[in-house]
Length: 224
Image (cartoon, rainbow, N blue to C red; front, side, top):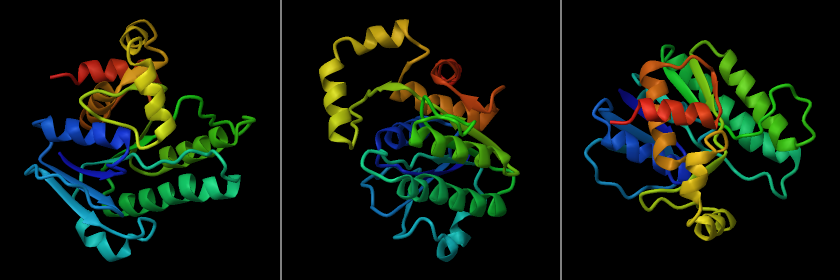
């Protein structure tokens, strides 16, 4: 597989990139983002592009890919609904619509979040915006999926860029393995999430939206 990756510097993006580089099914990983990543793996390529919402200048480099893992995301804290919509919904759909035109048989895996509401009725702004984004991604004419991880145990030295989240992971580190084992509906690991996304891209899945239990199931199926 030839894979496109958006959001490689975040915790989820780091985990997907790691699994892609280790997986023999993946021949190339092209990261597209505003900031360069230091990685010398022979499979890894990158395009540093200042405005990901405007892909026209680099479209020729985005053709011929089998899968896209879209891991860009921000916290909604202190953001208005309009601001959060522009960053979460508008940017994602702009990228997805470009890629479906360039790669109509591509599998597009969108990283959402546990608690996302596709009905538009949630009292939580972020859940409504994420739900709208999911709905429109899944309506596009390619193989689209959304993954909704809950709590994620970071492995292999992967860290969150959000200081508060990383502090929580550090403080809870002694008990996270137990929650991962006994609460699979709510907890997964970076390794299992990355492997699940690869499994979906390579083999599909019987659901279009994967909750944490589905992620753990697909991630186990994708273990090597």
